[in-house]
Image (cartoon, rainbow, N blue to C red):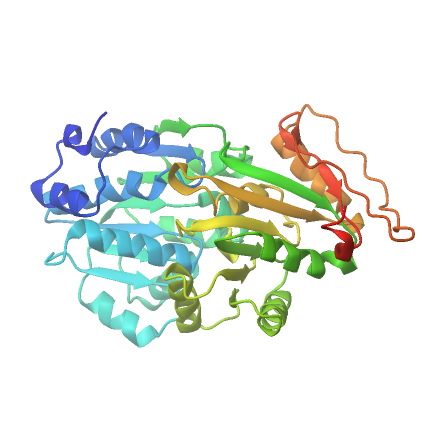
Length: 404
């Protein structure tokens, strides 16, 4: 399909899409939007950065515009992703829309949310935990909610929201339309879809367990105590915005502090920050007020910041699938990006799990203990891709890098 006109959308929505410079639908949008407009349940999978949000947001807004009755609920695993979704919804609805909305997430004032819900919103975007809080208080009613969207469903289950999701289903009409989107398709997702979706249409774009081809990957085999020096070298060598993934909230704060001390403009993003602080950090990163964002895996899913050029895995993720989602923070919407992963001796099992995910049939990289450098010699190995996966390279003695 060459443009969005073929969907037969209402003039208000068509005008919003033109203003947002949405011209040609992406493959996931081209497949999902007609099915959703026809009223089908959908089980959709696509790589991150392929336009999944608009694939459900456009038919959702179209239905709200055409039907004065009923409401819609969108569930998302994180506050940041929820904020992106509600912002897109507001743009699609247009500046003078009579359709009221509510943004219901943890970390924000309950009083503010009570006011939004008392206004009888027809579109609600929220996280499962806080949605459940309001359902149990009686401040939220879902008896007329006939459209449900679950975005990044696999992540919600990974975060332990299964019980909350099942509670939410019980408050909703059995006769409803459910759109479930997920970047990966593990068994628990299939089980959930079989239980709560009605004869869903399957929509899949690309492979789920692959890194986008337009991302250049490098892997550096390195000792744990040399990671920080290597990180600084990488940041000096790379131009443009960078997101650095670390394992813990404490490490995120400490690394951001150390990098600022060493002359880099940087901020940390993790789950312990107050919501207004998280919003300020993301707003500053989007506006490019600083170049380097240090983040835990809270930022691995859904964050759409088009100018991110590089991903650095300072620590490998605990869950192999999150490696793919981290990679998806760069090379958005067909752009090119690069990524580098630090692999220490302690990371053998994690790296093998990532290799198996990316290429199940390939022999795992032999993981030997990295030898200590002798004298002033520097050893390097080529980090180019082989057999469809990055080959680790070793770097030692950072002071000798340029002479090597």
